[in-house]
Length: 484
Ligand code: NAD
View (tube, rainbow, N blue to C red):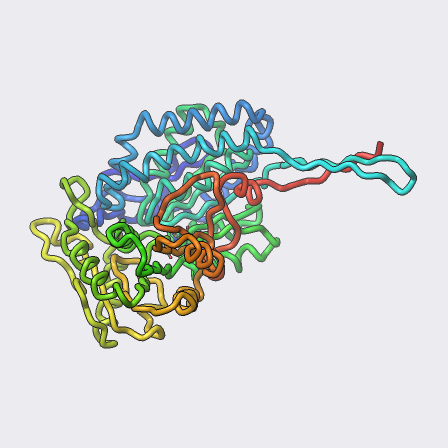
């Protein structure tokens, strides 16, 4: 049976308490995960602190950059192993993980290696009251020991999105992967050793949230900062833990994202874009669309076109050719999504398509598959429209005016992302200025330039990561003033 061990101070560490890691495609046991207790978390934090005081803390930026590039190259060399591990843990289509998850997992080290090499700081010269001169300049120093708490929907990609900049800035990290997806974070430990990243710089502790590795780590007094991606509710718990010691947090949280389709949009492109944003990764993308607003003249046509796209999506396991929709991550998550499917019906939604589970054959009948689902006809007050479901589903409602579209898009506690579909540049830019989100796509979705800021507004996050913006969290900016 495969064992997923903790990675502490450059070594793989077993514990006496294990839990099963199951495959979403057929619910079979992939292996046993060794849960870290307080002692393992303490050891990982101690190792990280020692690395900062030792070799890693002394390393020049140039050498650090070389090492991060080597990490990226080693992930690429072991591409198939990372891909296989991610597919087993998530069940997502091969086409998706091979195109996005693993390449981006490697790219995250390269981009931040480049950024740190070229990052400037500010400098000012001023006249002093005695007629002399003073010069101030900024120095960026590492934040220190950073806890990285990760979700399961894009395990390697979202973890390296934080570990890449953290290491580029000279920090040491302790990663707590999701209990659902322990594999690629563990595999990355081997990569770190192969390329000679000093012991204690990259650590992994496995386990759950409350009363387990997640809580032990985020409450640990020797952790200097916490970067977290996951549910808003979990963010609130972590923020409370971080309050002790006034430690900084960087949060990428949940969303209830709107797509707004104007009647003048390129119809085919808008339908294709919303098909992706609603159903990609089985709807388990924080940036995904669960609320679609379509201008009334094309409403019926749009609903029918999206229905057609949803109904031809092939549902199945990762390696089956042509599969566009994999399973949900777990039986618990499937139960949650299906409870929303039931609630939508109970609230009187018009079920345009889906609303249940597909019939799967053989061992896949045990998998966590659900149908892609589209609803219309619910009031904006419905939980279906207000709460993040995180499944392959969306509600479509008509709108008449641009003002109404802005009001509907903003009528949510979340503020992560939106996508606007229109051929009028003025409409697009007015909408981009008015919708309260961290990420606004025009005639596109999930298009990313890694140099740009990424993050959510309102209940969708705190801070921005990406490009030089990551330096804001992963470094401490010190001002030095010289009296000449
Ligand atoms: P989650 O919040 O349940 O878990 C995330 C991580 O936090 C896991 O590793 C979990 O073990 C840990 N955790 C849970 N409770 C904890 C606690 N009290 N203390 C410390 N750690 C704790 O989220 P999830 O279900 O893994 O991921 C899905 C969620 O993530 C969705 O809400 C989605 O929108 C969000 N998400 C956001 C972004 C973004 O960029 N904004 C990206 C991906 C996912």
